[in-house]
Structure formats: structure tokens, C-alpha cells
Image (cartoon, rainbow, N blue to C red; front, side, top):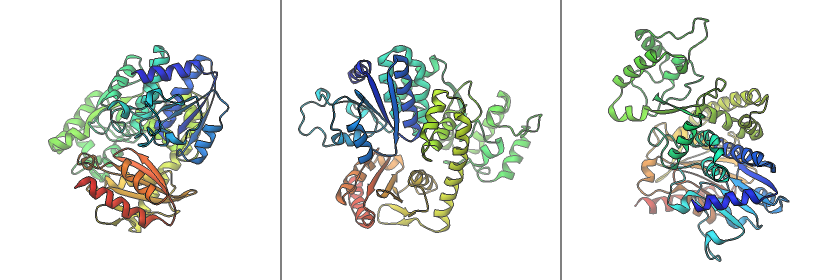
Length: 456
């Protein structure tokens, strides 16, 4: 990809670099790839994390004294906010639709080198993540940086890009091959429930969902009985509880066979698939999805720097992150319970929504929306609101079946937010916006009009 080569040229020519990154697992992984690439070149660099590319982020970019600003997993939707030369954007979100106006060719525009899969006909929500795009530029800087591919796999898993076909697809597949070839990732086939590395085997089965396993999901007693009948011990010889990764190959095969007997052919294809192990890592980081969750827990609680430290191998970072992970789990569970117990979800013509006010952090409300969507609410988009410093934070999630029918939440969020004086963007299946606090109803009216037009 020529854009990657141009990005690599910018990196190589820079004297010093300001890396600007998103706070989620994909953004933190992308920041780590950029930072390690620069460190290997001996470049002076600093890293800043931002929950969104708003006025603060744009101001810091435009006033940066560094010769290059490298924006990762952010920026594509706000290119017109960039007013300086010497900018590289490696992102996978839908680009700002009107940015071409007033310019000739995007690729020849001097101020910004923009590397984005959407400009080349690829889907940034399923085929490559922000960390993946950043990795491609890093590899173009030096092929030896292929050993950073595992971070791009973690970023892709953090953005749930491995969920569409029970494994990574598109450009992610090429990146996965690099990660396997360099020893950063090992591929293991089996059930894709969360917690292969940390959850006790009973809970690993009990909390399985999307789709649920008949007779097991949600029933801990049934799961224990299931394991006993298969002759699989729940505890190790030292009394510690066993996880999936503690099982012998024979035990794993027995459980897999029994699970398959409980599932329809369609559900089996969703439950079983590829898992991505990260060898040589401490418990909780040996599975790419759990590694990504650890990074996410840092970013969502204003501590993305610790997540970056984990990726860079800084002493003490993993221990510091454990507190973030525990807080993240408590808050997500509490937030989901709060929405359900208070009956906050409302149904309009073609969307469901809830407004959590200040009860749920604006950095995690999108995760709650996604969980509610998977809890039997897949037939309509789920729109979530939370109070934030800049007004109302909006997070939108939709099932991919709606996207296949024409739904594009990135366009919906952008157009509806602009209608009420806000801004938004993202992916077709997951997007967000920030709007004035008093504009929720007008925003929802606009959202429904656009969704109806897309799905007719």
C-alpha cells in the first residue's frame, strides 16, 4: 500500500514525534506499536491519550512543537480540524466525508498523510483495526518490526474484529500470519468464550453466551455436573481452580465434543473457532481477548499510560493494571444491573435507547450498550447516553445483520449530531457522538429518520 510507504517516510524523516492515541485497547496497542517503532529508530517521542478527537485533542495537535504528530486510532473523522503540516494519521474509522472539498487529491495533500482502509475499499470495522493500520506503517519503516504484529492482533481483538467469522479476516489475517511467524501469537481452536486464561472452568462455561449453551449457560450447578460427568476436575492438585488453559488436550477435547452435542450447527459455528494465545505472558495476558480487556480497563479509568507500560514491558505496570481491571469488572456489572433494575431501556419506532445520566461513566456506557444488544435486543440499534463534560456522550451499537441491510451508524451519528450542533462518527456497526445536553430528543428524532431511510 503506497500510503503505508508515505507514512513510513514521514516517520523516518521526523526529528521528534508526538503520538496521539485513543484510550481503548486498540488505541493503546497502536500507541505501543508507534512508540516502539520510534524507540528503535532512536527518535525522541511523547505519547498523549484522548477519549475522543475533540477541541482539546485538536488544539494539542495543532500546537505541538514536534516535527511530526502521529495520530493513531483517531483522527480520520476530524481531518478538517488539523491545521498544521507534519501529521500522519493511521486510523480505521470512517473518514470525514467532506474533507476532500477544497483539495485536489487526498494523497497529494501535503499537510496530512492519511492511512485508512476505507480509502482502499476495505472495511475498517472488520478487516483491520487502528493498531493494524499503525503496524503496517511500522512494518514499512522496517520489516524487522514484524515482531510487533502481536500487538495489532490484540488491538483487533479489543475491537471485537475476531467475532464476525469466529476469527480474524481481511488484512487482519495477513497481520496474524506475521504474528504467528514471529512467535508473538499462537492460534488455538476451541470454544471462544471469554476467560480462557483466568476464569475457573465452571464459570468459563456458566457465563457463556451469544449464543447460549442449552442447559449450561447461567447455571453453575449444571456446569459442575457437566464437568463431573466428563471426568474433568475443577481444581488442580494444589487446590487452585483450573482454567480452560490448565486442561489437558484430552480434557479439552472431551468438553468440546460434549458442547458440540448441545449446540445447533449454526450456533456451533459461532461458539467454536480461533483463539489467539500470547505465549510467555503472565496469567490474565495469555489470551489476546483478556490482554485487550486489561488494556481497556486502564484506558476507561483514565490510566491509559499504564496500559502502554504493559505493552512496553515496563516493570510494575501489570500489577498496577490489576486494580483497573477489578474496577472495570465491578463497574460494568454494576452499570448493567443499574440499567436493567431501573428499566431504563426505551423503545421508539426503530431504535432502543437509554439515558444513564451521571450514573454510568461515559467511557464505559458503550460497552453496556453492546452487552444489552447481545441480550436479545439485536433487532434494533441500541443508543446509549451518558453525561459528560462536553454535553451528552452518545454510544450506538447494532447487530451486523442490520448493517448488511444498509445500516451505517457512523453516518447516522455524524449526521444526527451535526443536526443538533454536535459531532460524531465511528464504524457502521459501532459509532458515537457528543451532543448538547438538551438535544437528546431532537437527536433521537434525527437518528430515527436516518435509520428509517437506510433500512427501507
